[in-house]
Image (cartoon, rainbow, N blue to C red; front, side, top):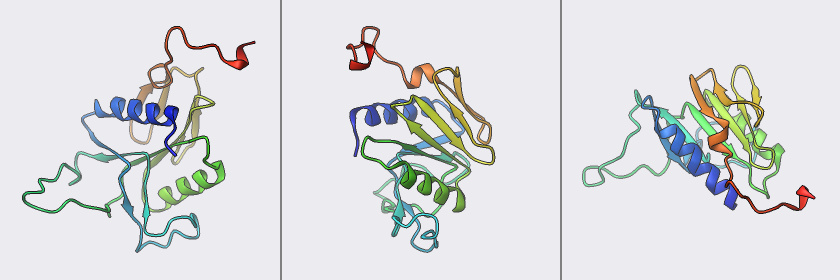
Length: 166
């Protein structure tokens, strides 16, 4: 389910990642896993996994397809270097963590788990780190990416008062 916070964070992260010319950003891209046995790690996947955001190196052949020349690709067989999952209010954390394990097993180099309610981003790779609002930036050493936390989780200057503020 794409909640308001989920949608805003997906757009912000994609926008921040777009400025890095080493990578091409895609959202909700279907990754073809039908020939991979990932059911040991993620039982919910049948033929595809669909991260909220993924990144491909500009060295790969991932680029806009001129459909006058060839057909669009419905499921991508080459795995991205980064998969980002953003928690929605109805997501079960155990299911999303299992999905992240599956991404790492099939060759994705780094996975980010974004928790809007906690304002945290956990980077899963060879060394897992969690970054919250007390951190200045989220750092993915595996992909040499640094993004400012304030720009990701920014709110209006005069936000509505929360029931938690009393």
